[in-house]
Image (tube, rainbow, N blue to C red; front, top):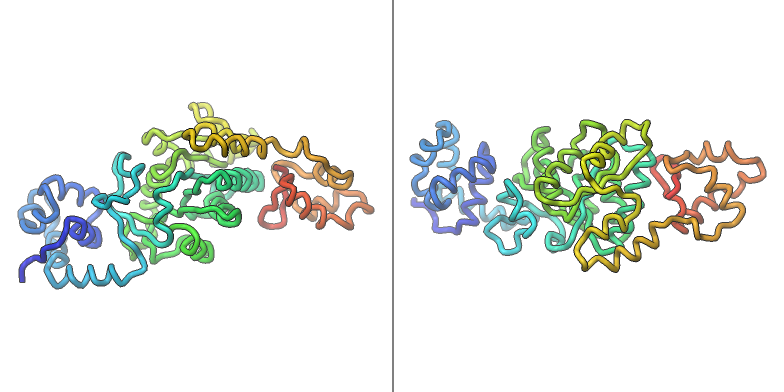
Length: 371
């Protein structure tokens, strides 16, 4: 039986789903043969010219026979995972022009988010309460300004960025370093499901691709590539987040860094970026004012929000609580111990009130931090 007459788009899908073929090899196949159809029609010669192993040549030959192709395409159409590639008109324009752009994208959720203006937010997998508070503060204002949040679904700042965006009624895109049939890290299953329902899950890898350490640095170029700029919130001196920042610079994107305490190891990454010319961020408007003119109004409103609570009227009880809480974060039990006995009774109500006013940020584990 001969090869089926199908489109270049579908041949790309078939090759991408072939075990052992990565994007670099697939790109070489296209460049060598001139088209995927031509590569399939003359596969043994193309495989030999590229120096591919006998096993891989045989694997592609099996994958591209008529029955296998029709079965694979039928499974694709029945799957809830949508396929997008460089041949599609709705392939993200920002990604199309980056070095080593992904040839394929696998999606679950709202694909329209790929056309929206977005900001990447990355950082440490082990953030301090200060880092979590900084991330939540910035992300909340950024989504209110109309931006989607792009991150990598990792522990720490990534998860905080996704969670805050969803809680604020905004949109978020999670770029995975594995196939969409795998939830990694496993403890983020609920977050994964929320993003699928209200945001977008994205991977360049076929759905059954397991999480392998080497794939995670590769996905960072997609986080930055989808974004107008990348914000780094806490990162050690050698951190995967800095790979994303490097990708952003290579792609001509803005890099923003949130400063931290000089004695914190988690400040080393952002501080080094600042020394190299990244923009210092202390308020959402520091980010928004660097974006296209369409976000000028958002920057103006965020500037007001970013000025903090200095002009807000607080009661005497509220002022005592605020003075006792640092920007790095204080646990509620520690806070209670700091207060005079007669001021301890209404602590929880006051904390909720101050959070509602935007003066404090509630952090995981019972911590609160000043905004």
